[in-house]
Amino acid sequence: MRTYIADIKTLDDGSDVTIKGWVQETRKIKNLMFIIMRDNTGSIQVTAKKDSMKNYDQLYDITRESVISVYGTLNKKSISKSGMEIQGIEIEILSIADTPLPLGVIDRVSADFDTRLNNRFLDLRKPEHLLIFQFESQLLFGIREFMNKENFIEVHTPKIVAAATEGGADLFRVEYFEKNAFLNQSPQLYKEILIASGFDKVFEVGPAFRAEKENTVRHLNEFTSIDMEAAFIDDKKAMEYLENAISYAVNRNIDLMHTKLEEYGYHLEKIETPFPRISYEDGIKYLNDHGLKLNFGDDFSPEANKILAEKFNGFYFITGWPSDMRPFYTHPDTNPALTKSFDLQLNDIEVTSGAQRIHNYKMLEDNFMKKGLNKNDFEFYEKAFKFGMPPHAGWGLGLERLVMNLLHLNNVRESTLFPRDRTRLSP
Ligand code: AMO
Image 1 (tube, protein in one colour):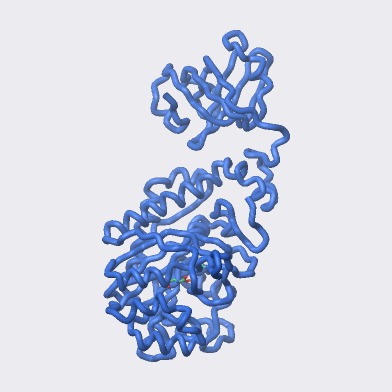
Image 2 (image 1 turned 90 degrees about the vertical axis):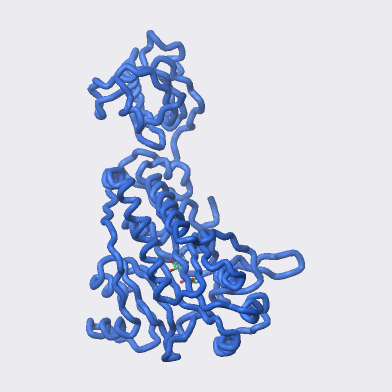
């Protein structure tokens, strides 16, 4: 029976245990060796004595990052750092690591990012990097739990599609037998079709593809989008679902993982709702009062977002974006120059976009015209609006950006296992 290293502390002194993992470091004194061994829950010292171990000579030459299985006795009165060690009885070598390692797992000096990503399997063995993805996994579990309690149906929509969702320029083309197809930029059109299908409340967690040429610390060409769409709600209710889902999941993660996060230098504070809201127009005014020169219709530059981040310090919504700045499916406000839309920012980075959508067929047709889109390209989508489409609203939340910001990482690639960016397609 295997014991995980983190669980060893719950066992009694003198218990027999079997642990499995990687050789992190060795120290040798001829007839005695100390192995610091690591699994994905922690590390512990193992002692091996020549006179009691058949394969001691092989073990003596073991390389860092080799994989072993240790059967031994727990000593809780050890003078090692953790006050515990395993006195090895049998140590099986399962896999020998080559030397030199392309990347050190416990080296203090950090390698450059490209070397790390080229050897991502080793980079991810670092406990502080593994923790990012343990955090992400739990966060997603919390969001799913919240959505489930709210009666959302989790769905999976196609990723090979026939139409651009979020604008024609940023599409990856794929050959689809005799036809041209694209990798989907967002499940937008499909989640709306499911509203016409009477699903009422849907959410999806899946990949989204953007052929954006930007090479910044917040852009990926493939990211994970958490999307939701619900019938008979407006933009305000969609914002409530969003802030409640995020605060539920983040606060749950803090309860679960606080000690471990602090141990590795990730500081998080519990989140309170409602998040502050500022309208686009008030945002422009505020920024102009703080030295910028912005006009109605201008996007918020990174500098503008920094100024707003200082004001709000955490999550905040920017609501009521101009129609010209939002996609064709966005519902106009009473003033048709504005929309019933919002972005959720975390500090100076956008993590979510959302809106109430157009549900009136005629209004949708007009908007295709206004935005210069060919309605024939959207026939499969538009059809769903002709035969009974409820009012609806929703949002799309970028998982990697959310995790990056929550953990104060300085690059979205840190919260992506195998990032796809302008120059990287491998591993
Ligand atoms: P939008 O295009 O704003 O909206 O995307 C929603 C969220 O997805 C994340 N995101 C990205 N993350 C990493 N790299 C990228 N290149 C990237 N592009 C987007 C961001 C962003 O806030 N259909 C709408 C959503 C909706 O209205 O439901 C949409 O896709 O966190």
